[in-house]
Amino acid sequence: MTIPLIGTPVPATGLDPLEPSFQNDPYPYYNWLLRNDPVHRGAEGTWYVNSYADVRLAMSDKRFGCASVRDFWEVMIGPGPLKDIMAYTLFFEDDPNHARLRSLVAPVFAPKRMRALEPDIDRTVDGLLAPQAVRGEMDLVSDFAAPVALVFVCDLLGIPPEGYQGVRTWSLDIAPTLDLVPNEEEIRKGNIAMGAFADYLRELIEIRKAQPRDDLISIMLAEVETSTRAGERPVSINEIISTIISVVFAGHDTVTNQITNTILALLRHPEQLELLRRDRSLIPGAVEEGLRYDSAVQSNSRRLGEDVELGGKLLKKGDFVVALMGAANRDPAQFDDPDRFDITRTGVQPMSFGAGMRFCLGAVLARIELRSALDRLVNLENMRLACAEEDLSYQRSSMFRSLVDLPITFDPVRNYPR
Image (cartoon, rainbow, N blue to C red; front, side, top):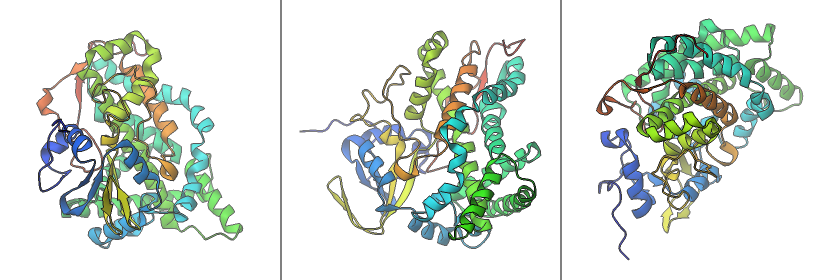
């Protein structure tokens, strides 16, 4: 049987996620891979898995490890604060270390605790949107989405408002270095930012030791003290700092990008935007469809601890495997008409938050923030892009789908909220 040619064929040299056309729009490539080469040997010998089932396997099976990815990353990044701190990140740990560090923050992200934050989240979203609503225009990334995500992750951690801008700046400079494809300038800037961020957190940790509060840093310190008394392996200061920074990335950059990606999808599908305005009960479905249709997190890297047969191909111990979550979310074997943006779609379980033991702890909080942001933004009448489609650009990344900016205009709102 001849397989129809759908999407953009991958070059004979293999998939390169940093190729400009892929950065701009990876979905035509995913279409082709899903239908023609779902377990693909890409550039530099990296394996790319695309189907929903295979991505779930790669994200949850212990044979697909993260610690060995760290070994590669440390060589690439070289000496400096990045290596000193992020060598301990949850992102680069396997069990039992992964479970040990995850247990430090898990109590904070209990679903009941997160849902209790909904009124605070709504008030904060209104407060951040109010000045933009009066103007009738904004860059959705810098004027709204980033501040929304930043306020809540900082508040959760216990970082005071005067530290918000530093966290935003440092995280923007560090993010490219976690992408497995940083250049020398990105590594240089990342080391400077990591050094400053770590110094700031060390001071804050000392303050919380003396004056504990109901925040994540204080709870982590209490968990460390309890585990130490129980005779468990001590948690180092660098492990605490790394875990805090991991929470910042998981709760800041991804939420920022998911708000903007979902709004862009709605602007490109005005009939869906109008449907959402008429029926606000569709907000939760719109959040899930946004996560599926254009996920902020497009991929995750693993390294095989043993040989694995996948899709009729032998992947060998030591091989790098990239789980393309963005492709899995468009798998026709999992979703009907997957390239259609449909906020009424039911039973959506996107791979955007991962799977298995690494399923995102902050998924409940992220969904609450996304629902609150969408509920307010769709109120803006005549919301539309304030630039040509071809002027939109994305941050250089093999893992994340992140708009540089998203200028929009709408009818000014004189009395917000109303």
